[in-house]
Image (cartoon, rainbow, N blue to C red):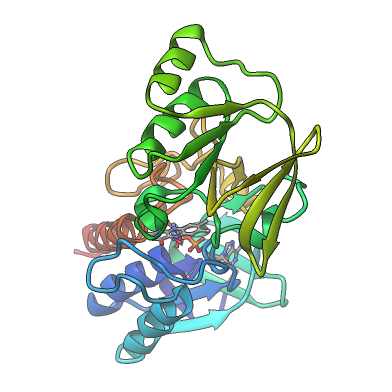
Length: 302
Ligand SMILES: Cc1cc2nc3c(=O)[nH]c(=O)nc-3n(C[C@H](O)[C@H](O)[C@H](O)COP(=O)(O)OP(=O)(O)OC[C@H]3O[C@@H](n4cnc5c(N)ncnc54)[C@H](O)[C@@H]3O)c2cc1C
């Protein structure tokens, strides 16, 4: 059984959701350990947008500011480490890191984000977050009115193209193979000036992540400022599964409205448990999960 320091809450993941929870818990005078692997999903994007009071900062600046402000709370300990194993031992949780350390906590908050699975198209990974974009609320304003593309097919492609059409009249929908759009969807898209291109995508031609052309099968090339794409994602590692957390059909950690998972004592916050990926939501979510973890501990103690 353990003999070392026991944290009230061990937070796994020290990006937007995790640091926000740490702030709430630190201010609630809780002993908090934050273990972070340093790989936030937005790390390649040059500027973060749509985050109240911080619009246009770099992702690194935002996290540096969050970490600096946590220095005021001596009960919050931040450490670079990757947790590889998580298990309940009686009424505590044992967390083991790849670096060979063990941490103990009365509660665990999973703020681990998701891992985007980028397709093996040359240029895609290099342009991800720079000119290959996942979200118009994050980056749409900066490229509005310009030549844009959506990579997608079927219902998802239709809905994504309809959304992006709001930001530009100059839009092409790249179905990357034969279209699976319905006749009605094609009619609506064409009526709104969206051009449908079925040729498979071969390469994203770019310069330092800034795309200039899509190269398609059949010697086609299309000049674009940005391409929108939705990519599949997975939870990073298997911590949620090791702890026995239920997942949703989308593969996210199932939580209630205050971030509690199906496993007592384990909460989750941020991209790993909410479908809309936005900094403001991850921060709000982390803060709420932190407050309810504090409530849980008060209920136990009082
Ligand atoms: C390319 C891109 C651009 C974006 N741009 C914007 C934008 O402009 N505006 C906006 O509002 N939103 C934007 N988003 C969305 C936003 O980045 C996310 O909603 C937000 O980062 C989610 O925060 P999070 O803390 O849940 O996860 P993340 O920020 O992904 O952080 C998860 C952290 O957990 C760590 N971690 C994972 N597993 C472990 C482990 N086992 N042990 C230790 N640490 C671990 C990771 O290393 C990482 O540091 C963007 C997303 C992407 C992909």
